[in-house]
Length: 400
Image 1 (cartoon, one colour):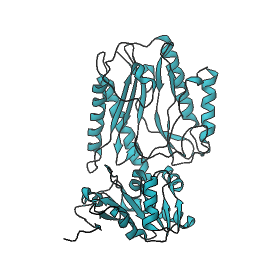
Image 2 (cartoon, one colour):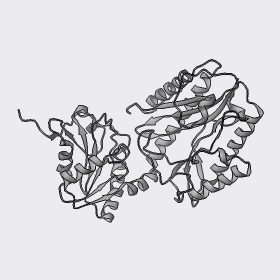
Image 3 (cartoon, one colour):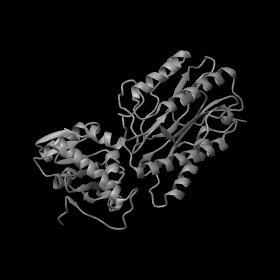
Image 4 (cartoon, helix red, strand yellow):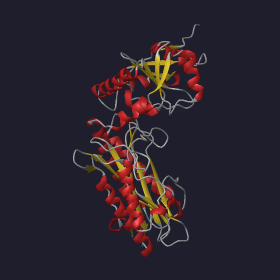
């Protein structure tokens, strides 16, 4: 039996997060960038860019996946283990490669990209080993890193993306309320996190009945576990007076949204209340700065000054916010739109960014713990639209 190196396996109805016209518009902008840079074919390897330009969010499990875009074609490259699911979930064509022969993945890519072409690749994602194979199998005339240009494109959201992100923020709120209802002295972090995650997944299924459901998660921390923004859930039991950190992360077709809030169990001491109030004030001040024409660095410096005036800047541990879109805790990042001192990007209408100041007071000091509030805002023509609804502050989040 002669076994193929790659083939097309297309069956079932196609279901995508967005309309075909949405993906065509994204590809049109990409091709304009390719023409400007002199790129003949882009070979995408990252989950975020493949999902952004095709709708297909792959599960690697040790196998490479790709998307090849030329002036006329857009073709996802997937492993045989997934059968026709990648075709059903992608815009454009799909080729399945087999594992009967090593590197059939690159032979499938070469069948679309051709050889001796100018190849665009993602310098912030592809490994050295895969880059060497690209060179061997495609024999490119030239290689150009297209990751920066694609990141800039993803930073500017379409109307369809904004609608999905608004829904995601509402789902995050649903998870927040479920978590609040589950909080009590003696409850474990893991059980509270499960309540929030389950509520969000059911809400996503109700709002998006044709979607794939995966990757939604909760980080719920208590006491000393609140000191880091990304600390995993544990089985620690809540105690009276504990500081809490609520973090809900619904994932809808690769799009990430978030809600993050500080809470206390039963009572909050005066020192903690003062730090909490200062962080809330910084949060509100920061949100007021998110307007067209303001740079990320400028906003960051103003919030720094706000904390420095209150002798709290030394307790800040990371930037004040970041972009939203196709990303998760293990793929994607629009690093050009983060509220940090070293990012000079100027805010424009259609960008989506969080405001999330955090202060971490070390153990042994009055008010010890991590304080963080997080809202998602869409930059508008004259300001911003806050799409997070769950309340912040001590009036709502001291759980008795």
